[in-house]
Picture: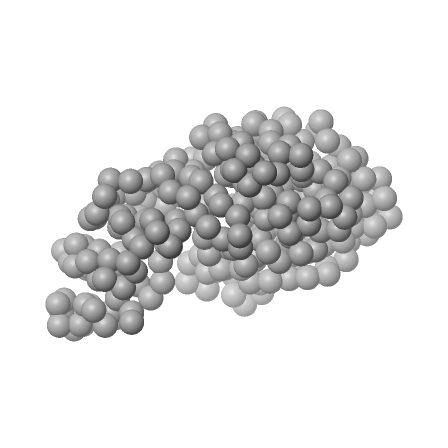
Length: 282
């Protein structure tokens, strides 16, 4: 059953098409919160929308509305509690590991669980992997769990709240021997790891290209992989993303080869978050 079915007859018929077909549910089967984006026309009926979500998703304890875009250095947004318990901290379960977080203090997307698994499945035994913009640690932990023979995972995060949760999540998932968390700005912290990595993951679509110099410099002298994320228009999803990586790679004497490209998620009308997997060789 969809929440639109529950709302039929409770809100004006012409507004049913505005009811979101998908929204984030963060947490576990026992306790979760829902975060929904509502058209202004639906705001007078927001509590009815929340009731419909409670009815369809029995594990949801609170329904929040997105009250702003993601903003600031930490990429967090304002949330308005529409209805339910005043809880913001949850333990999110995906693919057998647990991610603890506060939805008001950190960036986290449950919709990218499949993408995290896609990246983790490419990591080889013994590799040194860097995860930039690591957040509460979902990519790093996904890799550690999927490839327990990985050499080391360096996870850099600038948001102190997200970093604290990442440290806790590393312990919760018992991967302290694999994941090395770093608090700070990638521009400042990444140079400590120049020429050490086999693979760099850059899961920040807004502005990740500004850190490509650091990412390429972190790769070993023989090269390695860059997993680069970018916002692209529907008519040409991957050309710009690959070009950005290629230009930086060429400056350091690498040849760039596009080995994979994926549309990860919609961002705005005709604009998508995309991922390109680029192999750099000498």
